[in-house]
Length: 284
Image 1 (cartoon, rainbow, N blue to C red):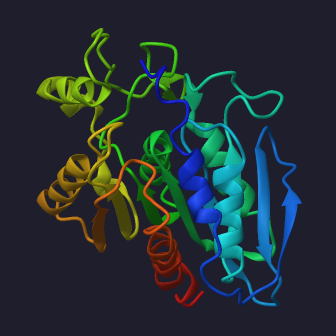
Image 2 (cartoon, one colour):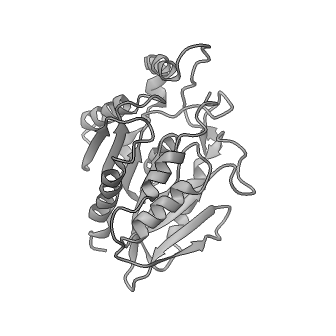
């Protein structure tokens, strides 16, 4: 279980929020009123239809990831639908346990209702625990055409407080690994032990070949939370072995899980560039 993973994306979101280049577009922020979504729309002010990115964080339940990515991309002409999905708002699950993937899919449905958004150009950005939902969203919903994941996992994991899966789809658990309870064993080592069970890993590994667009992975080589760089290498190998038909890139940095102030501008630029090239600069 993931009792130790409650702080993962606080500093990462803060890094992404730091300005590193000038804005090209003004934008407005709107509260989303759609189904049960707790979401904000960061919408560039332009007469042209814009692409959109669904953005959500990991085990930090705050608005930090959504706000950071909203500011980062809306100022470059890309709308962001930023979500929170547990704890932060009334009506959401109290913990990161048994989160329905239909919740994230409804964000794509919402994008199709916004007249300023070109619904043929939708992507997803997430990281850490949210990487699991980010990959699953792109796998389950072919309307997702571009993916960026930071500190990725190649498999689904159990919930924050339960040995059952953190994610469900159509009322069923997504196959997931559980982190073994081993007192006095470092967390990173516990992940290595779980990932050594090849049969369980095979069942819990995402079907990356079903993703319908380019992928960018960004990992931390000195990650003390989980082996994100090793899992990123495995994802790249998986994509090659399955003849993935879209571009896929992995960039790693010699930092910890939350990256660093020194790497933030480059990472931020890389994420924006990926979506500009794969969504914004594609003809409608």
